Length: 320
Figure (cartoon, rainbow, N blue to C red):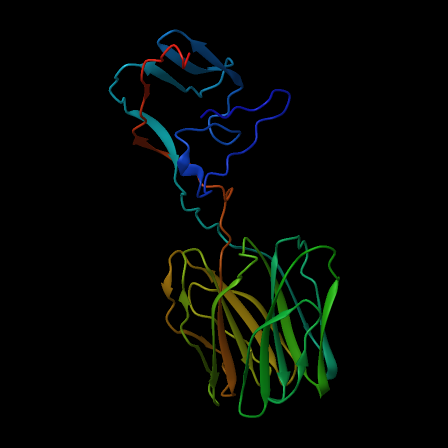
């Protein structure tokens, strides 16, 4: 069987992962040896020969014949599409924005980070006084996790995938007037479908040591983000290899964040920061998952397979 297209239209892509693709010995399309041409059929008393005649500049060629009598099958190397893995891109920090509500309010409003664009992933830290304080996020934000001290503070982390027209600021509301601080980081190159690869949270009681529990990155090129929150005004020093992106406070809260690119998958190990004050704190780690790069269409590799020349017995007068 030969399938050829009519003239006057462009060449379409071949859907190589289609389970029925294996029924065809060879094929040509916009994404596989794209070549314009025509099928030439030559018929004689003993043979039918079909050939693809390609236009100048094309690379695709194919032919087959049906001959009378016996013939030995001739193996021909043809292209078999095989999906190749797509490497993960590096995640980059676009910008950050921070805020506090001074002596307290029923909300915390943080400006949108500068320069955000569709496909960016925003990650927010909201630190509020009162472990039982209710935090209501703005529309479109999803909770990553919330961790609390025994009574004095709650910390919630959220994410949002940027799509369409965005607000110039985002407001979190509380069920009572509370001091609060926080920040938003905008990252490019994060997987929009599953941006959070892993997260952890840890309460450290009455200590200047801010210990965050290890998380496990499932793929290379994650971005590790360390959020530290303290029940007083403090300056947080993050571990070597991590870059501090913010440190914002009220008199009774501190929100701080640092991040680091991860080159390989695996456990990060605990991360330890310090605050310089023996107050209760909460340490949280979030591993952001990178987006795959390139066109998701599998790249064909070439595997030799045998094609068989069809053989037909000599025609009788009746059959002619």
